[in-house]
Amino acid sequence: MRMRKKKHLEERLERCNNIIDLISDDVNFVTAIEKKEFIDIQALFGNGNPVVLEIGCGKGKFARELAKREPDINVLALEKAANVLVIAAEKAMEENLENLKFLHGGAEYLEKFLRPESIERIYLNFSCPYPKNRYANHRLTNPRFLKSYDVILKKGAEIHQKTDNMHFFEYSIEQLSGYGFSLKNISLDLHNSDFEGNIETEYEHRFASLGMPIYRLEAYMK
Ligand SMILES: C[S@@+](CC[C@H](N)C(=O)[O-])C[C@H]1O[C@@H](n2cnc3c(N)ncnc32)[C@H](O)[C@@H]1O
Image (cartoon, rainbow, N blue to C red):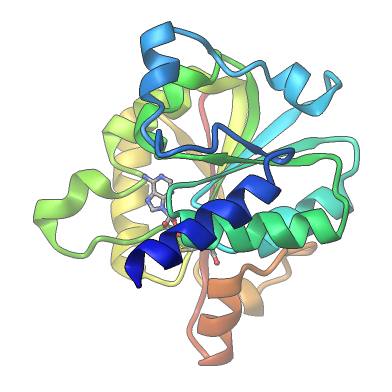
């Protein structure tokens, strides 16, 4: 039964292969790392427009809306879980979004497949908070990830983070500032603030409809 499910998932992923790069079991980009080859982003999108990256895009609501609102930027959406990535990619294909592509893999290897200073902005939307301290190094604002963001981001480019989890937000503020990022536009209740142009994610919709505050910040390296 499980084999059938997996085969079905693989077939669905295969049908999306013009918008998902590196579809394979190679979610850790072992091949790319061994070959020491960066992804050719310009070839992937067929133009040299600025590229933004969403890490952990889930079912892709945010990435699709961003690509629609900003046709002159290229949106790369990274997701390690194939079962949600495939839903994101199928929806994007239906909508024919030329400026949105997906990467199947883990953020642990960003530096290996994205060129230094190639990314204009990183979005961390409702990243898994990993509440237990022993899993802190899986949090996407752990210094091991911040180091990679620092490498792949262009000079002065920003990280935009949203979360429903106050402890994770506090942790992120500590880690970002400790690493040397400056913070601005911090909101402790995004939906009751005067912030304009918010793009709601799947998780955000769920948490906000339960009345939970949404935390948001922007970080940049001077
Ligand atoms: C809580 S969900 C949020 C999904 C979406 N961003 C949203 O706001 O609706 C977090 C997603 O991040 C993905 N994720 C967690 N760690 C990751 C990593 N190291 N690299 C890539 N994706 C990751 C998970 O598989 C999951 O789909």
